[in-house]
Image 1 (cartoon, rainbow, N blue to C red):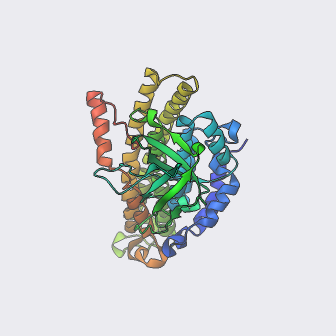
Image 2: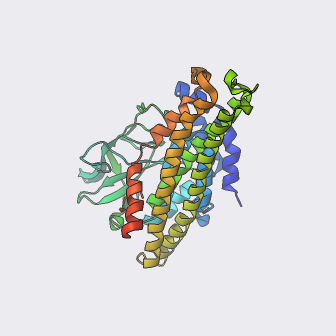
Image 3: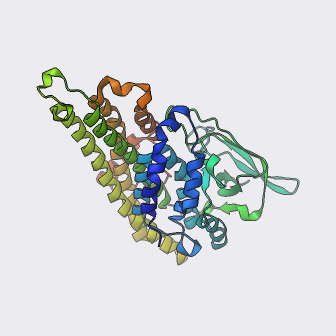
Amino acid sequence: MTDYVHLARTLAPVIAEEASRRDAERILPFDIFEKIARSGLGAARVQKELGGGDVTQGAVAEIFIVLGKADPNVAQALFPHFINIEQLRLMAGPDAQARYLGQIGRGRISSGAVAERTGSFRGEIHTHLAHVDGKTVLRGRKFYSTGCLFADLIKVQALDEAGKPLYVMLPKDAQGLVLKDDWDGMGQRTTASGTTEFHDIALSAEQIIPIGHWSGRRNYVGASAQLIHCAIDVGIGLAVLDDAIYWARNHTRPLRESGVSKATDDPYILYAVGEIAARVRAAEALVRRAAGYVEQAARAQLEDVSRGHATTEETENLLVQSSIAVAEAKIASTESALYVSQKLYDVGGAATTQKPFNFDRHWRNARTHTTHDSVAYKYKAIGNFLLNEEPPPITFTY
């Protein structure tokens, strides 16, 4: 039986080796994704009968901590693949699962084109289906399409003609599909998070997966997604910790006024490294704790679906608990990654700001990645639950 966490750890040194150069020169990691595809890591959460490992949410968190430490760009570009699996497992019928999860189980990489910049609020979708000359076609434009350039299979969130949500599954060579490498964020530079356009792409019935009955219903996928985001941020923090230790041991010079002859005896250097470690490890512990709650909620809800039941009250409670636990982890992982990535300079001093070392990529990656959703609303949701027993909103960010 495949140990998928071990597999991620085996891939990590290969991924990390050129991570800084890829960031500095904006080299997209096509070769890394070929290695990931060949390794079978992408099948970790696919059901065993479809060729996967059906690992726990805890194992998923560990995989993304490892990948996030090696290169958070690669981890983030693989994020949609894992969320596609969760959405298909929960929301797609048996035929669609066999078709698409079966492909993933055989080593294909998927990605997602979901977010748009149109509309008055975040999360509004305008990409839609239309009927043209007797055919059903997909029309629209996505602004954020993380990882799509590396994928074999692209899942698109769209609306039917009645305005109900659905997923469309596209092969990367679909006629009318345009993938643009135009992502220019200051961090996460090599995630291929560019624009995707859909120019009257003709669809077959099997490519369309209705999900309207899940609209407005609480489910575990949002918490699972947030768990991965948390894990990536912890990975960034762990990379900072490694760099801080290396630099203090090998390059930092003590101040004369410190009264010591080497930096590793300087009390303020020791304090800075200790603080980095404590903040990162605290966030890591909360992520692992949250993973246990998400695992319980996911198994319970998938079991409800397999039995043809609506979500039970017990499962609903587990879903709420998992969302709150992940919100707590999200606060810790966000604030930790941002804090330690700038604290690194207190360890290394001015020399660490030089371009060849590219240590600023840690902060740029953390700052860019943590803009996915507002941590302020996590605080609010936790407080509202603890004081008023009000469950968190039913959105993809909980």
